[in-house]
Image (tube, rainbow, N blue to C red; front, side):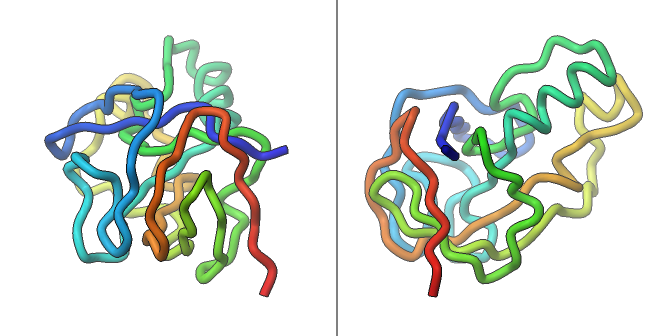
Length: 145
C-alpha cells in the first residue's frame, strides 16, 4: 500500500524542509505555510523513500526526508511513472500530477556532495484540486477515471 512517510515544509525556497506530523493543503495553492505554495503548477513536490534509499546506498550519505526539498515523502509507489494528469488522493486531498522531474537551475547541496541528485529525475509535482489535511501514514490512492 502506498502511503505518506513524511510531510516537509519550509518558509523559504532553496532550503532543506522540516518534517511535520500533519499539514493543511489548500485548494489551488498547495501546503499552508510552505514557500512553494501559490497559483501555479508546482504546488506540492513529492519524492519516494525508495529514491532516497537509492541515493543513500549509491553515495553513502546520511539523508532523510525533506533534504531534497520535497513536500511529501512517499512509500510504495513509483511516482515518476505516473502520467501527467493522473489524479491521486492523499489523505483528505485530491491532487493532480502536473510535472515529472525538473530542471535543476541551482545545484543543491546533495549534487555538490555526490555529483548527482535524484529529485530532478524521480520527483514529481502536483496541483491541489481539493484541499484538506494530510497526515503521516495516510494512504495514497490513484483515482481511476
